[in-house]
Image (cartoon, rainbow, N blue to C red; front, side, top):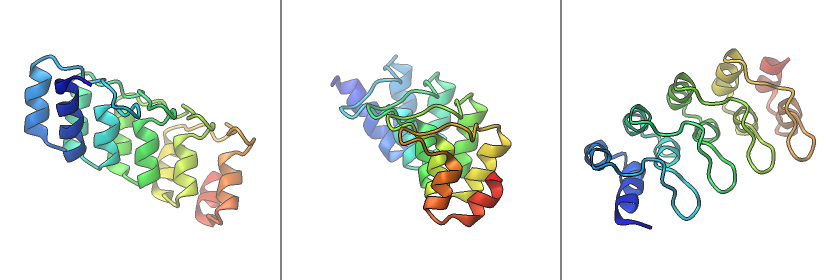
Length: 156
């Protein structure tokens, strides 16, 4: 991996906005990927670095980029429960219904991990609850499987 790519990936992981600003000004590839396919945006979002994520999005980062498993920044924010980051991503055009390698969507992650404020937000934004994962399970099925009665109520 190029040095510039290593620097931007590391700065995104730390949420180091001044370094990100500097490296973006040099023309670094803001959509570069590390060995797992993580982009700086995916890393910043997964580590709850709102300002870094916004800077990357403002600089043209691909909001729907995915890692080698098909996971997007929105899926990561939904898994971790970062509502402000999920809203930021949606505001920048994140596709609510992308599916990762096993067919899961952002709302499925939110329901499986009890991130019910995100279940409600994604529903309000128009997430498709009829999508099935690779096992043929819907978000409602996953909520039942996890005993997430609150999500089930929201989804009904």
